Image: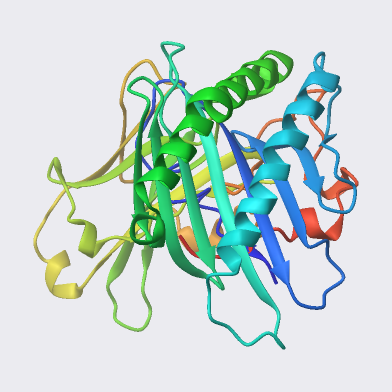
Length: 348
């Protein structure tokens, strides 16, 4: 019912290799209508790990999978921030035109980033009403500057914008970065680990056409950021010819990605050389793999988790080696149905 694509949002999970940045994200859902869920709920993610939960019934931040050294302070901060977000989303909800006899959702993805040089990145905030992107916000922490898009840009007066900018400068950015650093310290052995990808370049004969599908498969890597490129005679194949490329979680906490190229009989008559390159934080140098013509990709099955929190998300996320001793898979973590289904309607 409540969906958030495991892209962990398109701006956050990309195929670009990053240099060690970390993020803290809050996935908030406001529901108007008769359901078994709380009116307002939030799932908090450190990178791709669920670390906390909040809803309007409990009105208290609940830590997940670990006990924080700053639990009381974080609960106070969380209750303040999420209480404000709840009221703000209710106010935004009242501006929409909708049939009040039906169930409607307003979802918000908001978070901050700590760059690899330990400086704060921008704070981003996205809204979607009934699965349609509505508005967006970005706050530059260094310049204390606010940018808005969509209905926020249209509806906000200058005084409203000044008030919101003050809240981000005085409270939101400070609290988000502080909590992000606390969580990173507690979970550093997990989120800062590096697991090398296993990469193969495979081909499969297509029985219907007689052509061939060439597939570059990379699996078992962590963190999730990766560059995977299919090459023809040493040059990248055009994106419009490639299928796949989605980042998918494995059951053990790592990730996988595959990209494929279909070649017709006519194309096979031209003797091109195909290869695959991979860049990842766990690798000192770019990894180059040549075609292994003796393996049928149809025989390879890589277990994946259904896309949905995640991370999540992106929310989900999980590997090809045993997880660390302090890691608890989402399936057995005791989350409520709402937390595990928080990710179904947000299309950003």
